[in-house]
Amino acid sequence: MTNIMRSFRLKTVVFTTLLCGSILAIFGWFGWQWIQQRTLDALDSKILVPGQRIVEYHGWATDWKRFNESIVAAFGDDWEEDRILLVRSNMYARDTLFYSENWPENLEIQDVPNTDEAMNKVRMVRDAGEKGFLRYQLIARPHFYTAKGEGRNWRMLTLSNPEISFYIGVSLDRYQQELLDLQILYFSSLAGVLLLLALGAYWIASRAMKPIHTIASTAQTITSKDLDQRIPTQPVYDHEFDTLISTINNMLERLDVSFHQAMRFSADASHELKTPLTNIQNELITRLQTCIPDSEEHLTLNEVLKELERLKRIMRSLFLFSQADAGKMPLSKTHYNFSDQIEGIVKDASELAEEEYSIQLTHSIETDLCVFGDSVMLGQVIQNLINNAINHNKPKGWIKLTLASDAQGCVFRSENTAVPIPVEDQEKVFQRFQRGSHACKCHTPGLGLGLSFGQRNYESP
Image 1 (cartoon, rainbow, N blue to C red):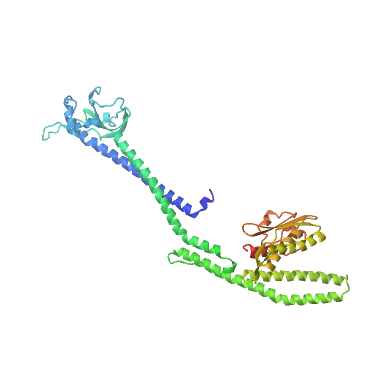
Image 2 (spheres, rainbow, N blue to C red):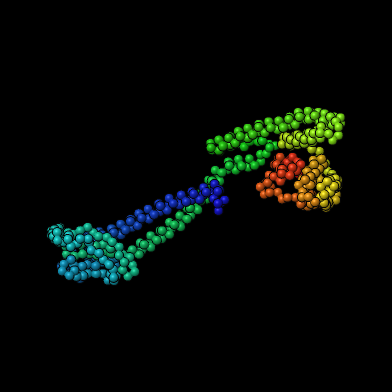
């Protein structure tokens, strides 16, 4: 999961979707509140205006048997389909004066707040209108609330004049179902919108990452042999990517200059030191021929000559490395019998291993295997592997060498009873001058260049 969330593209998609989803959810919540309030306001208006007309022209002494005509005039013939009505007296025992046939049982109704106090302060007034009707002033503002009866929800309104109170309700079931349908539609649409946002964010992130892919793919192809390669720029890239590409190209330019300077130094140093080292070697050989055998001077000169030979091997290796890094190593590739070459190398190695180190060397070499390559360089690689198997072996150990063919070509394998390479050193064995701690402690001969040389030039034969 951690590796997945390290993807810039995926994080862009996730964070964009979460951000937009959160904004849409907040917008939806406020929108939902607004729609609910607007719905309630519409329902309140649906019962408030007709209710006010009724309550302002009816009192305790109204003919309640003919009251239904007033309701029909105010609400319409089909008013009982979704509306209910109850009329109670505000006087004496507050008797019920009228109720509609669809009035639900156990419906909890509420009076206008502070009705009793208001009735003591408000007196009935008569207003001789054009038609001469009695008009009763409301004792308080209309009171809206929501109640439940017979399993249904009702939006209720209480209107009171000094003589009577009207309790008018409208069913919320149809409106709540419409709101629920709207809610389902919104969240279904929200899921689709979030999916489109995720796809859009993925597309935008992919386009934004295109220059990065160009940089990465180009950088992966750059090796020490082609440091002159540069990351291409495109007119469509943004300014930030142009700056990044320019910075990387400038870095490659500096590395190219430094690398070629280092290569020239290695090649020039190896070439310039070759002659003086040869002169010193000749002088030492001449001096050895004139000194007394086994004398202190003879032993000292022998040690110096050995170190000089080691130094010359290092210089030759550095010269080969500089040529290989520059891609200018002279190779003479031909088709030749690789099995015969291995046979000869193994024969010489067997005598050295058994006589000087008491190491048993066995081999299994498939005959007549031919390869296309430089026989000298390949022979040096094989000799390096066998020398490592001998030098790093246990006393009276064994070595097993195998040459066989497979679907891809030839496979040469070397096995021995050496001390296992520590885990921390296994990734470093192909580095130049890399020698394990065991080899250093035991003063095992070698420069730490053999595997590096073989891997550098023959990992893709």
